[in-house]
Image 1 (cartoon, rainbow, N blue to C red):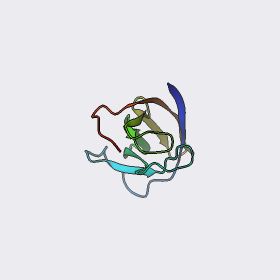
Image 2: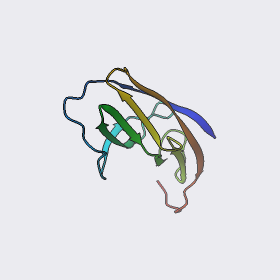
Image 3: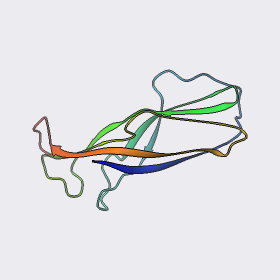
Image 4: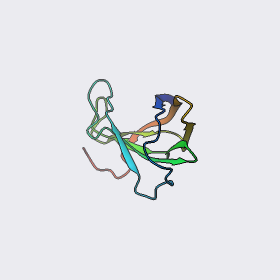
Length: 120
């Protein structure tokens, strides 16, 4: 199923440095907590994020990220919850005159038996 997964709001700030190009890999990472039916997923949620400033415009790119969550809440020993969020690459941009950018992440979620047949 596809669901609204998260609302993202990035605040506009004046760049404290000169323009700089889109970075090569590895990108910076944003790590957040993720809970399912109250228990926290063991490793939370991690996104790679590219950030750069070009001609005074802030740019943020967040690629699609697929993550399997195991051993949390209602999952059995050989089950996994797979969350793909955002569904496609998300690109945001704003200038110094703007307050920032907002976006809604949609996620594709599926629940399945572990493909590798391993247990918890």
